[in-house]
Every structure is written in structure tokens, then in C-alpha cells.
Length: 228
Image 1 (cartoon, rainbow, N blue to C red):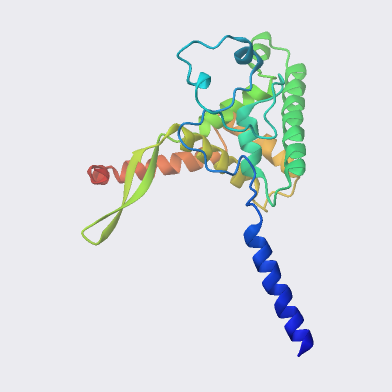
Image 2 (tube, rainbow, N blue to C red):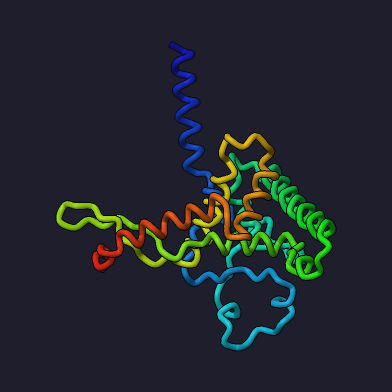
């Protein structure tokens, strides 16, 4: 009985003590209102004087992500891609995979550049891995998507224009999911490098997924008036 009473008292004390403790949350996970402005990261933007009408003079600014720096090597799209590819919070592992992927892209293109003897073909070979990455993501971005709309007890797949933020999200998700196929027995950085090169040339699984989505939107264009 004494042991039961002591455990009950301890539980009661811990619950009361938690009530009086301040609620702590990470600055980035807090819900910001619309008055908060995005942080400025680039050095060029930081060096420029703020005009009198700039809202950053009189409105609060959000806290920057831990990976946001003013380094010349910082790329916002690459960081978004890393956050989408991350699993179980293992950011260091995903960052290493992305670095190896960009290195593989560089190796493949430089090797191709030195093997060819045609000057015109050499000029057309892109050796910058970041340019290949951005072009591949842009080639995978869909123009239309399907959304569910219910009319008269029937659910219709209605094509609607895709927002810019969702375009980029969908393109990155297709690239990542295409590389996680277990049929390809090779490391993730090699599969991702090949998929990015295929998407850069307008080929590959991610491009086919975008084309299939556009075909579905074309087939359902008769239901487009249901979006209003």
C-alpha cells in the first residue's frame, strides 16, 4: 500500500510540475503570422541598403533554417531537395548522398567531354552539376494536376493549374521516388545522378510520370468546369 501511495504521489507531483513549466518550442516550428518576413541570406542582399518602403524595416523576420548561410555554395533548391529526401531526421547522411550525386554528375560529364573530339559536341556538354540539377527539376515540373471534386454524389478528377511551389515539390518527389526503386541494385547517389541526367535530357521515369499526369488531365478536360 505504501509503495502504491508513493508512486501515486510521484505521478501527481510530476503532472503538477509540468503544468508550471514554460512551454518551449523551436523558433522555426512556431507558427508565424503573415506579418513575419522571410530571412535574407544572400550577401548581396544584405549589403544593399533597405528602402524606406521595405517591410523588413518595421515587420518581424522569421528565424533562418540551420542550413541557411551566406556562403556562395548555398543553394536553396538543393536544400529543399535534401529536406524532401531526408528520412528519420538523418540529415548528415542525406547531405553526403547529395554531395556524392553532384560529384558523380561532374565526373560523368567531364569524362564525356574529354572522350569526344567534336568541338560542337563539346560546347553542348554541360559540366556544371548544379545547372544539370536545376534543369532536371524544371523539366519534371507539371503544368496541370488532378484534384477531386464531388458533384451530385460522384467524385470527379478535375484538372487544375499547378502552383509554382507545388510544381517544384512534385518534380522533386518524382525524382526521389524513381531512385528508390529496389530493382536498381546500385547506391542511391549513382541512381540519383543517372535519373537527373535523364531528366536533364527530357527522358527517364520522372519525365514519364509527368507525361502520364498530363495525359490524364487531357482525358479529364471535360470536367474542368467543375473546379468553380
